Picture 1 (cartoon, rainbow, N blue to C red):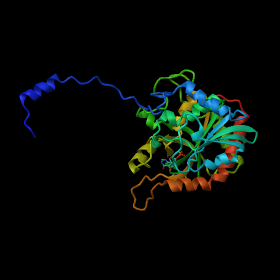
Picture 2: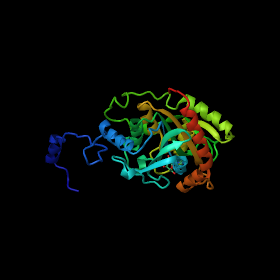
Picture 3: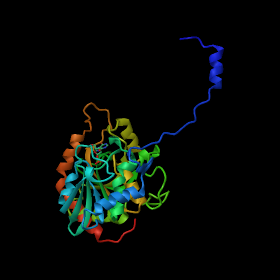
Picture 4: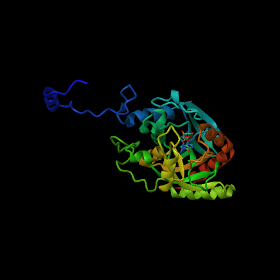
Length: 324
Ligand SMILES: O=P(O)(O)O[C@@H]1C[C@H](O)[C@@H](CO)O1
């Protein structure tokens, strides 16, 4: 290495750093329709208008199907299926177990729309884009969001195949500043500082517990706290033990940002986690390892009961007037 001389030191002293420019984050549309922080209200209205032109009844309830839970959308009657790639401004699904289409139609007497396939941060989508369908649902008239997900059970009393009603969440990604509402706020969607203390509708949770009893599901129904991590790797033992200490019952890679987006635009929210695996909290040699195949298998194993449960919930939720 060349020795440092006095001129180098003077050069260093005289060095004027270039004006610091913050990176334009999340610009990925290439067609001038997105700001650096998301699509404009007008652009999403365009998407909503496209969908409204394809359907005959406005859905009041929107369902997001979790990993391995896409068959929930198969109970929809008179279904109109619209692949994501046909929808202006929509992302596409890239994860196994997520079909990639919107399904409009009826469950019982209730007009619904289901996302058969959701978008995850680890697929490379910024959080605002993962949640774009929630805003589109709002713009087409959806009042209630039911988000479902597959999750690892961290609460030691949970078993594989249990169904957890989400009472609350911990926004771990938000602690690091990653939030779907990051960036300029458009008041037409909602306020700059939305409250989250009543994120998961109390009436819906009460009904969900009653319905679980009616359907003899009380031995598999739980209620607890969900957290979302960015993924795509499953968690380390130390990470899981930390989450356990702060009160997390189930761990996943979705839902939290969708719920924040839905509450921001004043939708009522209900969420369910299907416990697809036990989180590994010990270093024992015989402790298993999480894997996506198991997640999908448990989704299939529970598909009948979940279809029944969700269809009764949709019927009951549609019959009540509720505010969060
Ligand atoms: O879409 P969800 O949250 O149900 O999917 C979970 C989290 C990961 O995407 C995947 C891991 O198996 O399942």
